[in-house]
Length: 447
Image (cartoon, rainbow, N blue to C red; front, side, top):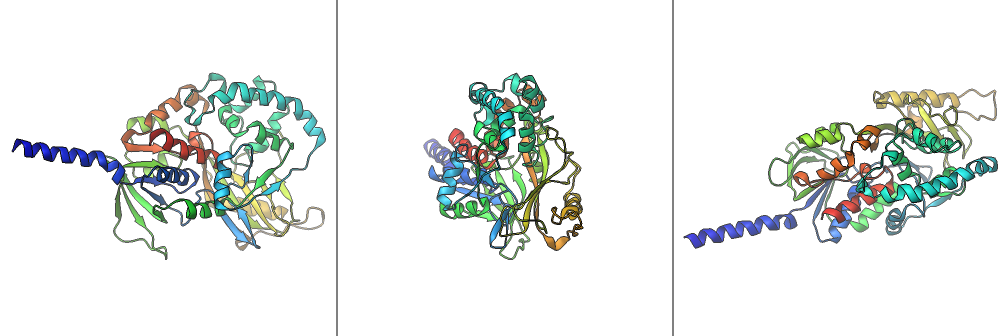
């Protein structure tokens, strides 16, 4: 009898230890981080299940298709020198980019030139050793200050103009608030060189890239249009309770259940986002994620009566960001075959999507004309002119106080707790390249 009992215990222990290999790893979010984590896991022979609330993959990489071309609502640019992992994804997808070369302003380039060299030297010798994902090597005090403070301390006079251009229109906030750590991660000497008009970058349809790449790269199920009603981590294994829409967008009456060996949360882990998934947070998770900041960032595709290949930016002193009211800060008609402009707006924590949309229409109505003819009155922009408008929970980051308080060390200690892992722009920076790296690194480090 004793021998029989021991045999049962042995079998149970064997089954328990085998569960992580039998059960799938559940990934919440089918953006660049979640998709590349899934690919890396499948390469290791692990099963995956992906949950995505949108009806298509790509995360923030969405687009509107009209006039026989794409109009990006998310990421649109990449650089061969600074985006090595992105290049691999693009190659697999079979898509190609179009070079966007800026108009070179020789006077400004000369002004920036000597400061650029100092910046590149600092980036290589001081910042690069601390640039690892999840900032595992620590964050020196000098990298926790705001971007404005860092620029002033290093006596940069021309670079603030480039930083404003690189930050505001692309959703990265106010240099007077955002720590320099993140801007150095973003603005490699190569990327800063683009904003200094030294060279061009590549423009590509990232939504198509991810759709095509996913078809070729991932074999596990992807539950698009799914609503997670609870992520239960109270037991030994995480359980995701969800409702998955059918092909007509109808959700089932009864929720479905997926038991997971682990969960990778591939979205910005803000407290509201975690609470929306009904995650019961631990005290440590509440401490780490409560001060997490986002930039309220909106993107649109609007049909306008402006000349082709024309851009507008909100007026402000060149080294001072425009106010974050929710109004558009920049627009650009990317193709001379279309009169659809891509727009970018940024707001504050009280800016709602309806408010930002109304500000978009009001602002663009004033400039919806040919600016070369001062007698022409702007044509009102109405709902049918707006082909797409997207609100983005953008650029998750910690503030100077948290960075100085060792918040990334606290964040890294959460990885794996309750079989939960985090992969998003918070791990490095909010770009396609760093999202890809975040997904890969989490798998390489913990699986």
